[in-house]
Length: 97
Image (tube, rainbow, N blue to C red):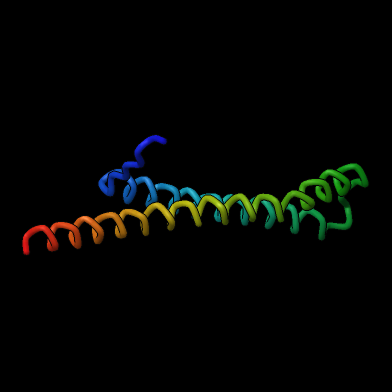
């Protein structure tokens, strides 16, 4: 079995990037669905356009789930970086005794 290595200097900034990406995803998802909500509220929208809007609406939950997974992964990576540092400090303190 291979050895697992974790570099907190990489984990933390990569985790922050993932959290930022999830925040950008939230903004973009909100923007798209605000537009869709506005479009579907209009009476003059053609039946075809309403059908397209409905199909896009069906994907909202999936997009929200993807965004949540990206955010969770980013938070996990940041937490793992903290845990690695804490473990290294604990091991070092035991050695120094």
